[in-house]
Image (cartoon, rainbow, N blue to C red; front, side, top):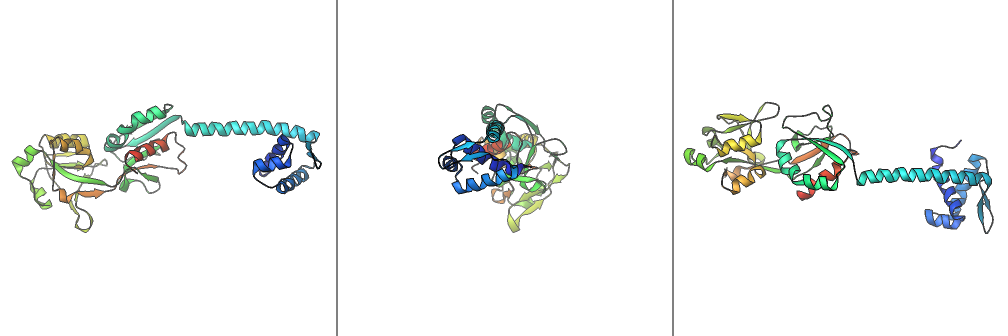
Length: 299
């Protein structure tokens, strides 16, 4: 009785019949003719039927060998077509890719590559859910998520998308003129600030500086926000100082709408990571999407 472990020997047999030669079959398969002869003897013994007529000059299939060779060629053609289909799927993925991302990642990482991704992978329907709350991507039906490195669940496979990120305190020029520019982190306590509200509805302490000198401060002010867009708008309007990703306010700083306060106390935190459940990454388009983001980030 043959089993799946006999497939290599069956392929050897089919190759020999196609070439009508042990030597040419050995060249195609990259083995010795003696290895082919040994494999054929084992196969014929297991099947209990002679499959080949061999002389010093020719190799011809027997009647049952000819019938088996024809069936095998049909089977190997089907296998080849199936593998080609898989390769085509890998090169041209199709289907739906569902990704959960925070707002800052959507703006900084995904928006710049969406047109390129859609152009290269037109058969992938990218479904983005943009929200800052903590999400169990498996329970809620997502294929992958993006989060800051320190918040990725430990049982997930994580791939870095950016280098570490820099966090800064910013304020509007008018606000700083009215209230004065703080000279030390402790001086922030006397100024109105816009609090950071996390997705799980807890208040986030501002982290200033790195390493052993890092400070974590509670701040007070007229507003607490769990949305970066609103935080930046409120800071520009002069409601208070804001704690944000420096990259996120690059344009506002360049046009003078915001200024960095205490730049020597900027803090470096984990970058953004993509995460998903399986190392096989079978989700259509996930790997090329990550590669596009990483390429733009210089990783």
